[in-house]
Image 1 (cartoon, rainbow, N blue to C red):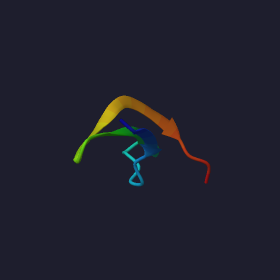
Image 2 (tube, rainbow, N blue to C red; image 1 turned 120 degrees about the vertical axis):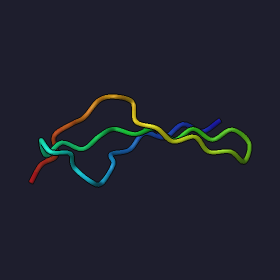
Image 3 (tube, rainbow, N blue to C red; image 1 turned 90 degrees about the vertical axis):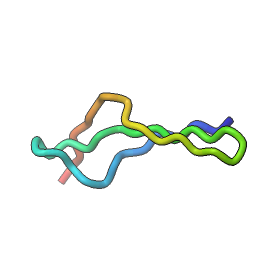
Image 4 (tube, rainbow, N blue to C red; image 1 turned 60 degrees about the horizontal axis):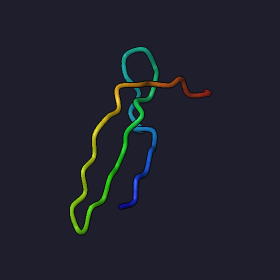
Length: 42
């Protein structure tokens, strides 16, 4: 069951990128946001 965290490439109105998670179980992939954002360096 691989779990991967990554930054969504499209920033929100505040210029922060949402943190997303991808969970694979068998051949099914579940992707969702975890509710946290982080600032990116310009």
